[in-house]
Amino acid sequence: MSSNVKIAFLCGSLRTGSINRKLETALMRRAEEHGATAERVDLADYEMPLYHGDLEMPETTKALVKHLATFDGVVVVSPEYNGSLPPLLKNMIDWTSTFDRAHFTGPVWGIASCTPGPMSGIMCMRQIQYILTRLGVEVIPVQVGCGNAAKAFDDDGALVAQPSSDLADNMLKAIIRRTQEKAALAANA
Image 1 (cartoon, rainbow, N blue to C red):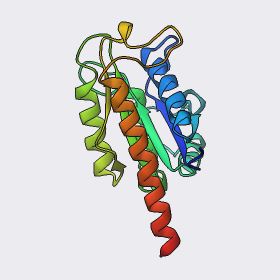
Image 2: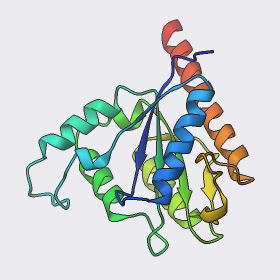
Image 3: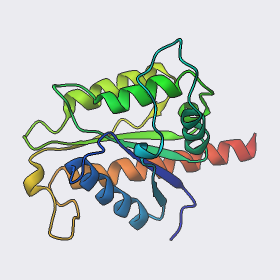
Image 4: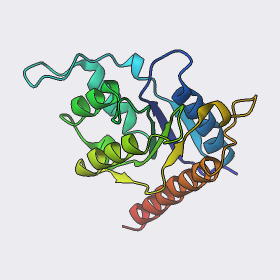
């Protein structure tokens, strides 16, 4: 059953073999199982220099903002670097926040993180939520923290660890439900 909801998936890691890319892929499959259309938006396709207010905005930033604004939902999947979000993701947020913010205020956002250890990226997810909320983003409160990554996925790459698997379902269902509510409100306005 199709929900007509389009969800973009952004990974804060470009590393080959990244466990967060693995989580991103598992979440994309899960979103499609729930009837959404899932699309990976690869930040490697949108090169941006280190943010500096005196630099001219790169065309890649404008293209990314316009592309993200076409989605009903966005899920950020991020590694945790030294208890924080990775510079790639922070740089993207800093650049895109200086342009039209429709990509922040239109879609409903979700946050997920995967770590090799047991802490499941909780510090990183907290910081991402804080930053996005300050920018006016509607962030679903259910976040997918996935610790002990070596045991979190089956041989086919499906997320099987609990409670991460249930959190993934709850977050994705909440994104779909909330975007449908927003669409109904807009249709009745």
